[in-house]
Length: 355
Image 1 (cartoon, rainbow, N blue to C red):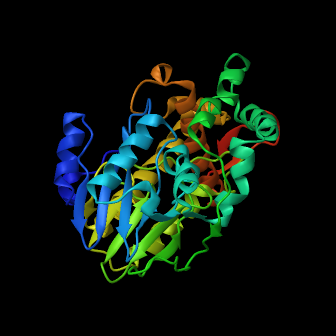
Image 2 (spheres, rainbow, N blue to C red):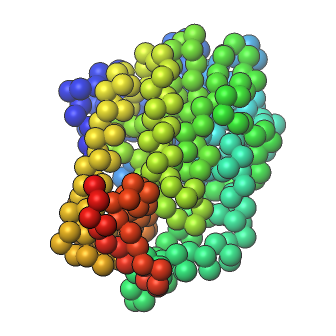
């Protein structure tokens, strides 16, 4: 869902213009010892991840790192140079979550600088199976997709849809585990790690109360909603976790939100209202599908939902993400007592008659 851009105040005007022009935004000095460095992403509609440089007395800290590609590595080094630093000046990398565009280059940065890498324990736990020892995950994914009703002719493509991203991640283990409320050691900054699960089990935002900034990763973006999917490496109810995490950041005193994609913005409270409204609309859409097609599988429900393009034009990787999003909404409706599922394979869903 696109945000009502009139309802939020876009502070990253150069980033917004670059987005509209379909070009990479510039490296920006945001003041207060903070820089924004766009790092390009291969074959992605999101185009780039925004890596933030936090200046300290000696060197810099990175928030996220980008994909592990030569193009991304060059862009990161060029951004550091424009800020007056080199890769050897990086002291730490605080990673919001383990997706390739955020964690991918962290290991290479550590190899080149000696920087320490920080991640939430929930994401650190699943990292090896996600990127290194994948046989168990692939087997579990096949069972999961069968339960969802994925057709046999699509099974192999769906099951291995994430395999190509392995080459974009240097799958090293983190040095530091950051729990909710922890204060990472970044001299000159009073950062607090805010655990915001949903997009990933261990997603972190970083809050700076003196500067009244929220570095929001993928938890809150200005234009689109993050993908909240149920899959074998997720929590049992990721959408409920995400909605609870929105309440957590809503209580912070924030003047500006610095997301990992698109552009900076103000008016966090209004964006949270929009995100909640989007998911309530999706929940209503799911119940509408089941009213028309009782006993549908998660796959059949996903096909009937509204996406940015017709289902047959969506690539397997994105179809799997859409399926996971549909399932995440089904789980919330199940916990509310609105729907129930059968115990067979595939699982089938129906309304309970309660609202």
